[in-house]
Image (tube, rainbow, N blue to C red; front, side):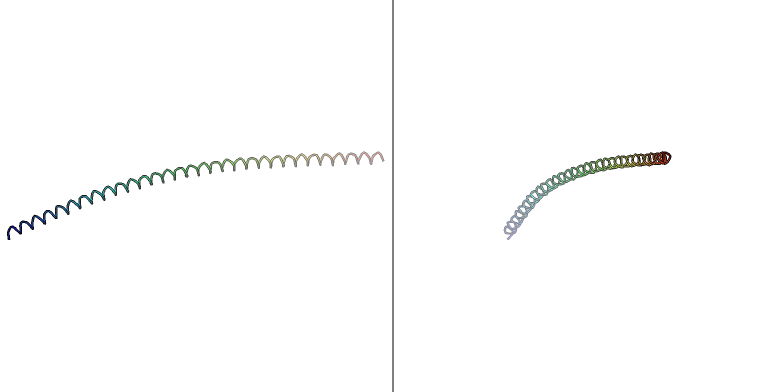
Length: 113
C-alpha cells in the first residue's frame, strides 16, 4: 500500500512537473508572440507618424504657396487699380483742357464775328 502511494505520489509529481514545463513553454511562446506584436505595432506607429509628418509638411508648403500667390495677386490688382486711376486722371485732365480750348475758340470766334 505504501509502495502504491509512493508510485502515485511520484506520478502526480511527474505530472505536475510536466504541466509546469508545458506552462513555462506556453508562457515563453506567448511572450515571444507579444514581443513580435509589440515590435510590429511600434513599426506601424513609426510609419504612421512619419506619414503624418510628411503630410503636415506638405500642407505647410501648400499654404505657403497659397499665401505667396495671394500676395502676388493682391499686388497685381493694386497696380492695375493705380494704372486705371492714373489713366482716368489723365483723361479727365485732357478733357478739361479740350473744354478750355473749345471755350477759347468760341470766344475768339465770337470776337471775330
